[in-house]
Image (cartoon, rainbow, N blue to C red; front, side, top):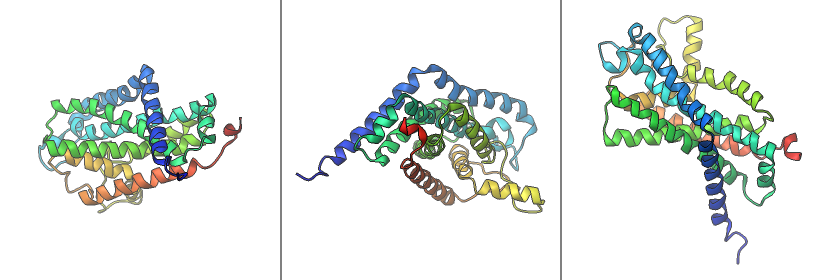
Length: 279
């Protein structure tokens, strides 16, 4: 019998058990469940209602673009994915501290299966919470159809995989949750704010130096394309001519490439060791 005959079932078992372990751990800690979905919900209500009448990104009275409550909703969905990526990635630091990660590292399993199990568990958690939050859209003027809903679920799952992979990359080399939170706040929050979630991407016409820099930073941000696709699937009306938007095909390509790049980086960095692995 070949030595590789049992590799596929073993890899599947590793991915399944690590994924299931993430799900059980997360839902046993109710504070993490409340924190990851409660914070975006509160922010959406406060900012949405507070700025609803002072914001307009459309050229008419379209419900999808005339108020901040509607405009901010796609960004809130992405914010839930981001918060969940932060919370689930903390388990990597906890597993290293408890010794579980070291036992996985010395076992005869591939690093890619270990990363896939951890990332897949976090992505499923993020998708579940995003779908729960999506129920709020029943009270908004949203263009619903079976095809749009299915496409939105696939998009949210892909974005969850991408963000959880990014969280894995940062968490792998961290030895304390305090340091991880500090780095995540420094990187992910600006990344989310510069994604078109809180304000649209300005069109590249008659902009100053600072606004031009903001424009290109937002265009280089993969989350910008996730938010744009979510908004496109939820609302039929486009943004006004004063704002930049990419074609749906471009958005899709960027999301797929970003997912592959972040996951490959997570697999690559998992092959490195830190001092905590030697304890």
